[in-house]
Image (tube, rainbow, N blue to C red; front, side, top):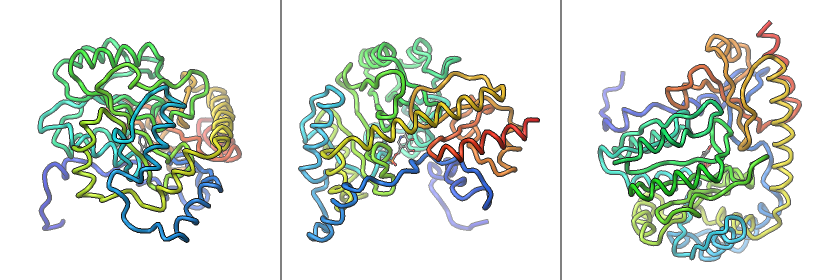
Length: 368
Ligand SMILES: Cc1ncc(COP(=O)(O)O)c(C=O)c1O
C-alpha cells in the first residue's frame, strides 16, 4: 500500500481496461483487444516528417498549431463534411484524446452532468470525472444505436452530450435523422454537443454526417490517428465556435504547449495529399468486417452487423469471454465500456484476415 496521497477525482477513476490488454495473452495469443490500425502510416506522410526534421522544423510551433495545418483542416471540413470553419476556429492537439480532455476541462464545472453513451468509449466518463463532472449513461437500443427519445429525456439540465458516430465499441453509425434530432434538441436545451468523429472514414453502409451541420453549439473532435494510421504520431484537433478556442487554448498552452512539430508537418501532408490510402484501408476493413461477422454469426452469435469503425460488439456470456481470454483469444469485456453491457465483448478487426479467421476458429472450438 502506498503512503502517498492523491486527489479524490483522480483516485475515483479506474485505469483503462483496454491498455492492460496491449501485451495480453502470451506468444500464441490472438489479440483482438486493441483499437489501433495495423496498417503502417502511408509513405508520403512519413516523408513529410523526415523532410521537416531535415529542415530543422523541430522547435515549438504556435500553440494552436502551424497555420498551414489549421488551414488544411478547414479545407478538409469543407471538402468532406460540408462545413465552413476558419483557421481561428481550429485548435491542433496531441491526438483526439487531448482535444477531448481540453473540451471537458473547459466546459464542465463540478457536479455538471455529462451525457455519454453506455456502452461508450472509455475516455469520456474518465475525462468528465477529472473535470469534476458526473458522467451519466445514455442507453442504446437493441440495434446498438442511440435511443434518441430516451436520450432527449436526459438532456434537460445536462452540460454536455457526447456523440460518437461511428462508435467505439459498437461500430454503430447513427443516421442523419438521429444526429439532427439529437443536436437540435441539445441546442434548444443549451446542452453543448461534443461530436467525436475519429472513425468518420470507416463507414461501410450509411454515410457519415457531421453533427456540426445541425447546430451552432457543437464542438467537433477528430484526429489523424485512425484515418491515416497515425496513432503514435499524436495529432488531432477540435473545431468549434471561435469563442471556445481561447478557453481551450489556455489549458493546451499550459499543459502541452503545442502538438509535436514534426507530426504536424506529417499531418499536413496527410490532409493535403493523396487520399487513396484511406479508401484502401476502408475497403480492407470492410472485407475484414464481413469475414469476422460471417464467422461469428455462423457460430450462432446473433447481433446486428456493425456499419462502421473497426469494432464488433458481440453478445457473449461472461463465462465465455473469460474462457476466450484465458485461452489466448484477447477481446475486451463489455464492462470496460460502462455498466450496461457486461454480457458483450468488443472484437477489434484492425488486424489481418488470417488472424480473424484464427480467432473465429478458436472461439468455435471453445464453444463446443
Ligand atoms: C472514439 C474514440 N475517440 C477518440 C480516440 C482517441 O484517439 P487519439 O489516438 O487520436 O487520441 C479513440 C481512440 O481509440 C476513440 O476510439
